[in-house]
Image 1 (cartoon, helix red, strand yellow):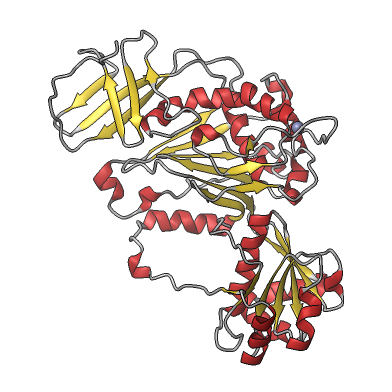
Image 2 (cartoon, rainbow, N blue to C red; image 1 turned 60 degrees about the vertical axis):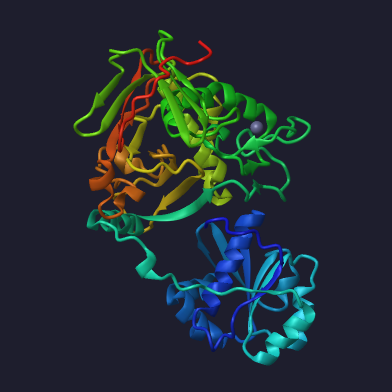
Amino acid sequence: MPFGKAISLTRAHTNLLLSDEAAILTGWAACQVWCAQQDTTKIGLVLSNTEDLSGSVASALGSDVVDQLVHHNKFEQDGVTTLLLTEKTTGNETASVLLLLGIPPERLSTITDHPHVDACVLIPRSEEDLEAYLRLYPKSAKVELKDVDDSQQPAMTPEYHERVNWYDKHYEVIAHAHLQPGNRHVLGARQLQICRYCGRQHPATTFNKEAHALPLLIGNRTLIDALECDACNAHFGSVIEDHFAKWTHPFRTMGRIEGRKGVPSWKSFDDQSRIEAPDASNLRMWFPSGDSRRQLDEEANFLRLTLERQPYVPMGVFKSLVKMALAVMPPQEAVHCEHLKHWILDPVHSFESYPYGPLNVYFQQFSGPTPTIGLTYWLMRRHPNSDIAPYLSFALQFSNLMLQIILPMHEQDKSFINGENFELGWFPTVAGIANHEETFGPTVRKVIDMSGTAPVKGDQEPMRFRFESREEILQSEPADK
Ligand SMILES: [Zn+2]
């Protein structure tokens, strides 16, 4: 669920139930957005008439959903539980977000004014219902689904659609957001501060520092985690994120990703070559003539660079991605991942610390204009009907990179560990836009084994860029050196 614009109003309403067939879906989606923003996971569905269940609710949300509501009084999707409440049970602390279906005016305020209710969305049955609601809450926001104009969407390749279909079939997304400057969101803001990694709370630990749920170095300025303690924060910074920083360094320079101190510059081991980004839209490179790290293909307009990395431990890179997945994981799934928390908190990188392998990173580097602002993540859980996909997978996109891992889940993925084959499709990227690869060059795809526990020294990353034209300029040496 993407974090949309913050809903500052905690009272909202949809179109009339009978005039808008998407009214229920719209109201429910608004409740989900609110849940994501406020870090709660329960929506209460309040009906005035139980016949609506088999009628309008079934046609909006599907008969599967209604079956679950009827038999279990709830259903779960995307990490959010929707509870079927009666007017009598709304006073309990079960759900602070309510979706009200056709509640008559005289009964509205007793439900909506309850102190446990933070937000509610009314789906009015009639104009009179709506007027009464607006008298109670004159600032209620109207929520409406906008039709997406398909003609405005770029055409995608058949291969792209195949990939999307594969993921639709085998996975459900349990956490997802596109993070960009402006929409600050604090995970666990309204919860008791118990560290999601070490399980400690005050006074055994402290929560004074601002912890980024995903690293600042890949451009996350907005997703903050209130449930990461200072001790874990310091540990992650020095023991795992440092390796991720070193491994991603060439990509972050070339992608002009602004971290804490701006875009990191890159320097060769022999100090002869360097790349700097004076701002997010420019790169300056200095390579001595004849430097084999820089090759120009004038015919095809390609620049090939080979950029060295500082030594890094592969397992540290993998653990960083696991940490990101745990940061955004809904609590009901995180309880199955205690082994991963222990593993990433272990100060030592060793196979023995969690005997599972290989630790593969599914790496895609696509060509074309670089989205320098913002990053996107998807945490996915295997669909109950799938028997060929690994249980949990996390995909992260920033700049021109898509990095994906399978979370090591020895229980849920037992059959794969015992030798049965699994499948994982390449995650769809913007390079699936028709003619994208023809214009900008093919996507580089590789599976990188990050199981190694010893520092990798002298590693290099080959990179290729297409340019439009080349001009000779006079200055060839940096002014300050
Ligand atoms: Zn902690």
